[in-house]
Amino acid sequence: MITIPILGLLEVDPYDGWLKSQPIEINALSGKFEFILEEYETDPQVEDFHTAVQHFLALDHTALEQAQDAIYQYYQDCCAYITPASEEYIDIPNPNQVWRHIEFGDELMVSRRAHGDNAVYISLTCHCDWEPEHGLQIVFKQGLTVNKIGAFDGHLSHADAYDDPRFEDMVYVPCCR
Image (cartoon, rainbow, N blue to C red; front, side, top):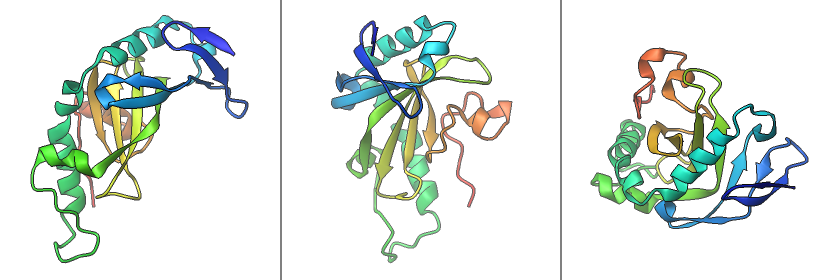
């Protein structure tokens, strides 16, 4: 067990050594979520984790609303090759209705990016009706703003996912099918 500002007492996962908080109310997500801190105890600048979590806890629903169009684009790309008559097809007529088809996971992964800016990011994995296999990943740079939308791939930026610095500031990169 270890105590961290804002998060309180965290348990050490015996499998991977990551730290896990108790569920905490997140205003922006309208629910309680556990924070998982990856490699926190060996990080030379743990204050960056504290700052990212503080920023994230201060967010309101507008943080996700700003990502709504990118999420809708992800939906459209996933459904581009499915006909409306298909059983897999999900009809979402406009961006503000995507939320009806998303179920947030219950954990927020807090990790330092190994490449690029080496900042701390917070990643949320979600289930979504239009892509049941790969889901939806929403990543918040330093806990402040959404910097990545797409299928869950574990990467904290599209620049890392595609090993291409041109994608550094792209919130969404269209799917390749």
